[in-house]
Image (spheres, rainbow over the protein chains, first blue to last red):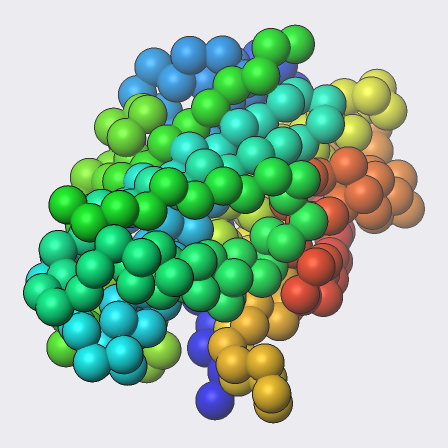
Length: 143
Length: 148
């Protein structure tokens, strides 16, 4: 069964001087969130950006896929701490995503954890959707 | 222009079926501790976000800025744009869950811009939006646009 998720954005004015708002998402979990070109291409100053949302989407998707892989292997995770850092080059786009994960997984050694993390990086739906990003790195280790 | 980075942090406890996680915007602090889980990702969201909803916000946000840029380049800067983005995830036979579609619907007010020019700007915005290009790795992207 297909799953749909929706976001609505408004924008006023030009790209450089104008400003926008991600004013509503289908779940109601967040919003309104302000966005602007300056906060996207320079310092965030408390405002999110498409790249930060991509970082959140990718790290969240990867974490869920890793937890699934670990459970399937008979060593479910107690806790996973993941971060994603998205690098954006204005004019070019997203050039790199760096995933870092630290896990507490009883009964699993470092090599086993790294193998499961590589599998999650390759297989999670957001990884597949972002397969065109030139460089996606993974730093995985037990906590 | 210099490269810049944006970071998000996630914690996850437990397995997919019964575990849950929390998502925070580490660079901006614009959102923190957004809960998510397996059942609310696939089924009724019950007030919880998901990777796909964050993608919808990212793609909608990126496309909107791209459209504002195209309208400015055409000499008809927008007064107001409304953009809705719907991301669809589906189970693809032999490939598991995939992001299969992003549907963008844009309406706007741009003095001096007629319907055809607005549609053309939306097409150029799609071509110039880095996320539109990336998502096409696994998804189709459809854009419809009209003056409001």
